Image (tube, rainbow, N blue to C red; front, side, top):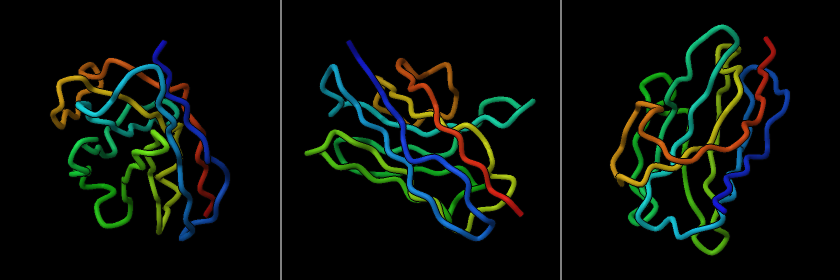
Length: 124
């Protein structure tokens, strides 16, 4: 059974940093693209960034470029989202997702597997 389990969310002040983790299990993800999405109350789910597991190549939304970094640890089967210079508008539930196409897709419908989400709240 495929599972994506996020952790690391919490409350942080504006300008602070936070690192989210996504532990993947249940299959081999080496050919997958792993992505982070977020959803704020009353808003649609938004693509944050993604990493191709095999190469480590990354792709980011303009809204987080230069502030957020995605990485992966093959030995731990874990993908990370390092967030810096956080802003109140970054407040959302953050989701980890897996895409079997192996391409960078910003459409949430392209993703096969999802985690349960972890709340990130940035106070001003």
